[in-house]
Amino acid sequence: MFVPFTMPNTPTPNSTRETFHDHPVYTLSEIAFSLHKVVERTYPQPYFIKAEILKLNFYPHSGHCYPELVEKEGNTIKAEMRAIIWSANYQRINDRFVQITGNPLKENISILCLASIEFSPKHGLALHIQDIEPTYTLGEMVKNRNAVIARLKKEGIFAHNKNLEMPLLPKRIAIISVETSKGYSDFITTLNSNRYGYKFETELFPSILQGDKAIVGITGRLAEIKLRQQEFDCVVIVRGGGGDVGLSCYDEYEMASCVATFPLPVLTGIGHSTNLSVTDMVAHTYNITPTDVAFALIGYFQRFDEKLTQMSQDIVLKTKELVMLQRTYLLNMAADVARLGKNQMSNSRDAVVQMSEKMRTLVPLYFSRLHERIGNVEEKIQLLHPDNILKRGYSITRFKGKAVSDASKLKPGDEIVTQVYKGEMRSRVEN
Image 1 (cartoon, one colour):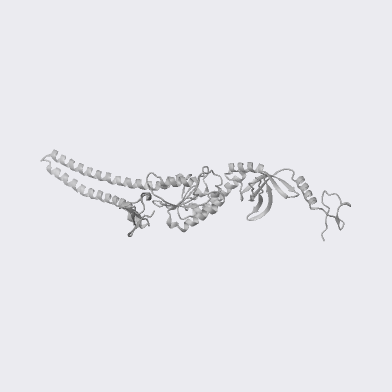
Image 2: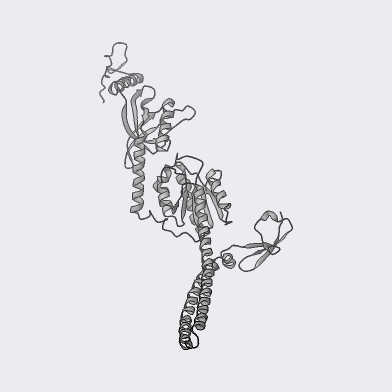
């Protein structure tokens, strides 16, 4: 049988107090108020406390926040305690937290808070948070970021995506973005209105792009694209119309490793204006803005065009040089023959023979090299031949023998011919 004791700081029971076997009986409120006094006396001032926010429990209608704080050792919780941040403090704390860390207060982050320890007879023990030091959390975020980079390098996947070879002409593009975002709009507009008239094929895979839900959203979309990877040349992740708030998700291992190991080149334009995220580091190509990503893709086509133009110009120039060289040789020989006269005809004849022999050797060699360069140009041009394009599944639609580039110029009843690699189909426009 247990032996009860007299509660500290409580008068010895008198005739008015209920007893049980000559021992005093206390009410719950007496115990609660006693604990309140003990806690108040033992912890008279605020303390700096470090912990992890397990659940934030923010209520927008009142502005109050009731975080559940834990201390972990590995995956084991060593301690857990309820906390309170009144609305007057929460707004100030959260605004400063966003300003310094780039993220609002959220779950699963480490914090250093200044809090008083209070016991309420009605609500129990709680930490009343007066302030949170964002630089401590920022330091923890940097430590986590560095740990993610080290892990990716240790696993040998940090440069995997960056080392993939970009297709010669990246035309088929899978886009992860939000359809209504300014970043997506800027990307599509820049891509489709390029002044060179290059045509791109794009497909949008909508996803949340910031906050903790972005990790699940983006990695899920990448998994969908991976199943259809033969349909695309590269993947683009673009975001715009906001600041750096909520972008710490791009420093998380799950997101970065998914991009690093993706089988297609990944191009990012997620708007980190002040910091390079780990996801940006492991992507094939990093740009700050979606517009820059679009220009990068256009650049592949532009550089290919420039090479073809330069090679064509080189062929024309070398041909002209060869003709001029031959003409100069002949004119010089004619002048020499006329100047030397009959007495030196024999020597001139020898010189002509020697020069003819030299031309017989040099001219075929030059034409052989020129023919080799022309062959290389023909091979590259052949890549762009319509037949080769049709082999890849593309088609050409013609109306009255001319290729259709603008569907709005057709009207109901027009007969059109669609050419594929093997054969053609005839159809009529309905609407």
